[in-house]
Amino acid sequence: MNKFLSVFSICVAAAMPAFAADVAVDQAGQQFSQSSLTLKSGDTIVFTNKDDVTHNIKVINGDDTDDKGLQKPGEIIKANFAKAGSYQVRCGIHPKMKIDVTVQ
Ligand SMILES: [Cu+2]
Image 1 (cartoon, helix red, strand yellow):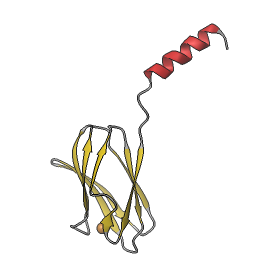
Image 2: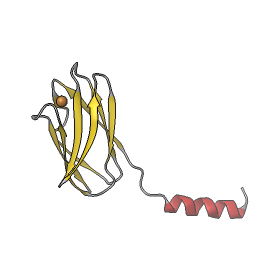
Image 3: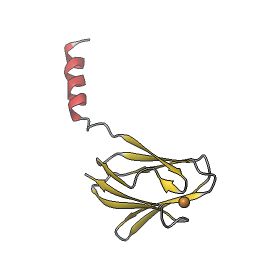
Image 4: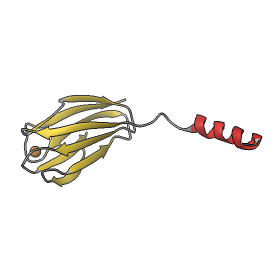
């Protein structure tokens, strides 16, 4: 590798943000596998519906609701959390299903 490429590569590496993580949450027995989560901004929750009923993920942040739509048994839905803040993840079909999510 020539000198220019070496310097270029180091600069690119230094400019990259910390790697965002995928956090797995299952839905089983009409419950989420976790009731609270702390994430870093940029992380993604990967929801796997292990129930034999349909769920409906909603990500609520203040007055904003991001409705992920119907999630059939076996389906995987991803929710990305780009901004710091306090969120609640709920199921639009089963009111008892919720997760408090803090994004740092
Ligand atoms: Cu549900």
